[in-house]
Image (tube, rainbow, N blue to C red; front, side, top):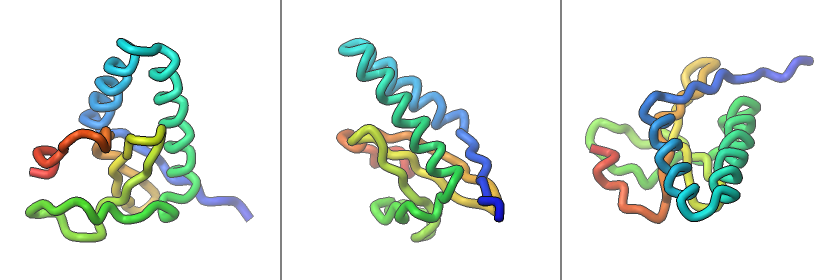
Length: 107
């Protein structure tokens, strides 16, 4: 029996966020920046295998976003990918540094 694979699609906004986080880390340590990307690729592969293994992002409290819509995938200790699942697709909409105040992100 073949294992179902999901298509993981990174939104342009999420791609830019990942790039900015990587650039920030690279200023202090190129090794840390490479590890961030490596861990993101591992997380992306896990999403392709089974996105339902990740919990809902219950911390999102924003108008227009129903509860139990977005899920979160933590990686590299302090980053999370916010994503939704539609059919055979996983759409990553944001890459967030959990140490930062991200209230404006949900408006």
